[in-house]
Length: 374
Image 1 (spheres, rainbow, N blue to C red):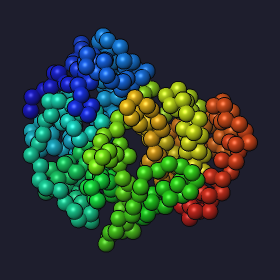
Image 2: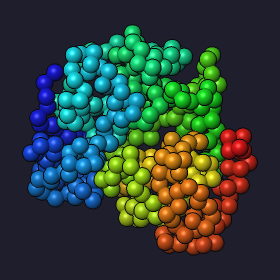
Image 3: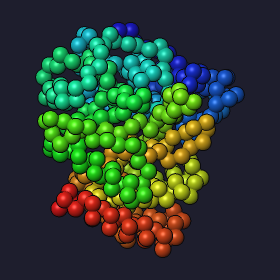
Image 4: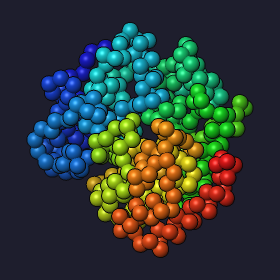
């Protein structure tokens, strides 16, 4: 496998720009003339739409810009890529980010695509979800799986810790999750019920399903929201996480919801998106969703217009030390109404409105999710 030393970035068939190594452990990026004429900033703060070469910092994304790090699989997806590399006689620790983006090619989250594309020969996908879950468990337990290439083809570009695959159903793409090593058998139905509760709270979520299983209570699935149908043809939407936009690692708790509120306003300029982020914060606090790191908040860009993406990864969870990964007015261990209202005030949301939203969310969560919050 040859090391990639130059990578071309594309969006919807248009040449966005070029990436190349710069010094040690860093990369350079330059927009193409075509994109400078007709495109938009793919990351407004770190890559404004101006000519010239931009140099990425060595940290926190191993020398590449955050928007490109978003395309790289992490957690489960990175595990699969590393297993495939070892299977092919390669050393994962010596495989750089440009080569890994070449492996992602056109299969990553969001709309950015990378060339040259490196493709392994993989077998056809499996439709038996119980079989896929079993093979995922083997990989997590460091056992050999005869379906490793299939798992890679169906989930090698995914992020997050839990095993997952992408399925095509009714001409739309769905992401289906399977239990991780420390999960209980009801993890699927719990995330499904969490999402239904979030929707009742007024939070925008993608279409979700509970896929049947003979081995557990079911597998949680959600329709991909970075894809849309335009005149019967699937179209990719550009997506950026808060981690990418702010160039901060999601592995180190470093954000407060006040920062996320400020980011939401600065990038969307939409009061309704600001309210959506506030409502999501309230839900995460009352529903004990504490793995609320910077990669679990994203924005979609459609033809240069940024909006808050639907909420995802909503389930009972903890982060480092059991605290929220993103603090609420500086409080991570036990935030409540006081801290929520403090964030709202700083964001310019009226206290009466903020209190009504928080109390509605708390009441809905306590009613629908009580069995998970004991």
